[in-house]
Amino acid sequence: MTGDAFGPGLDDTGCDIMHIDMDAFFASVEIARDPSLRGKPVIVAGLGPRGVVTAASYEARPFGVNSAMPTAVARRRCPHGVFISPSGGEYSRVSKAVRAIFSRYTPLVEPVSVDEAFLDVAGARRLFGSASRIAAAIRDDVRGEHGITCTVGIASTKFVAKLASTQAKPDGLAVVPVGKVIDFLHPLPISALWGVGAATETSLKRLGVHKVGELAHTPLDRLRRFIGTASAEHLHALAWGRDPRTVQVTHVEKSIGAETTFDTDIGEPERIAQVALRLSHKTAARARRAGLVGRTVSVKIRYGDFSTFTRARTLPEPTDVAHEIYEHARDLITANMTAPLRLLGIRLEGLSEARGRAVQPRLGEPLHGWRDVERVVDSMHDRFGTTAIGPASLLDPASRKRRRPDDGTRSA
Image 1 (cartoon, one colour):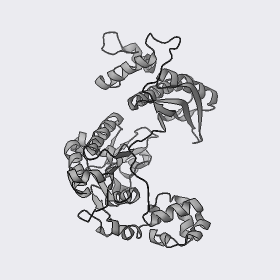
Image 2 (tube, helix red, strand yellow; image 1 turned 30 degrees about the vertical axis):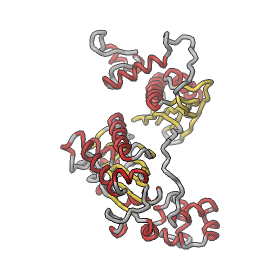
Image 3 (cartoon, one colour; image 1 turned 180 degrees about the horizontal axis):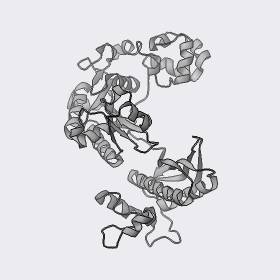
């Protein structure tokens, strides 16, 4: 990191915010599951011709392999890499277990994604000691219990804590003392600031601003003329270490969904309907697991030329039932599809808590309603895996012929 001047051991008085980021999370989980992979370039990616890299171990990165890169490019750059298809359920399980470790030390945990979170440890100091000691304990627990590593940034604000963890990766611990924030920020490139995208960076460089310190000392009026009032004021505040945001314990999901990219464009209505049903079941199961229902069903369609659009339908009542999601998604797809698809996604939006929601019975449903049926399926998936039971229509024709009533496989 910047001159290695902000490592552990510095005065963390007043530094109550932590940003914790798991190191190459998906790849690290795979290595923990199979220790023989340790030290090898592990690449978690979709393995089809249109697959994309989800995560790469630090051994893979010197070869130019990064997340969001097409798998085909990653294979060319690192032909000796170990390519593994993502195992989503395992990542979710480890993520929840790691968050449980965070909660041992403070109830003020704000998840940002599956592999990172902000913590406020102001109230935990009396029990566990300084922020640095708490961070060290958390890192030890994560490594000892799950065989993976994380990096922690400690500062007085969320923005600086996040930057500190980024600079300390991998498997690091960084403290930015209150009195050293400016020394830490000002040598960094302007791209380090939240809100500086490619266009803003180009505009600032035309202005002669390349470093955070140069931006901090540029008059606000001049910045406003080049990048607009809102961006100028936001970036100027960050450049001086000002960030009033607090750790928010309640994280409200805006939408829940699932999507898939096809190996080759597909246009057959039967196959698209089958994929839509599978995505609807994934979406509904994720909503039920989160205790949420949604008022709007949205579909995302991408064609072979990468043109993409979404269409949505608001429902009379919120739902977390796959059969209902599928009905509306199917109608939206049928009404709007004009060519073979490269990608299909289904999302549930307008989310609210499911608890206490009255359920209106519908004609044609099983005795206790589709929701109860799907909840039973959820419990069987939790116990026996996602292939234990599911809609018969999701089986390919050859597999339906092979299956017999006594072969231990059930469909619903």
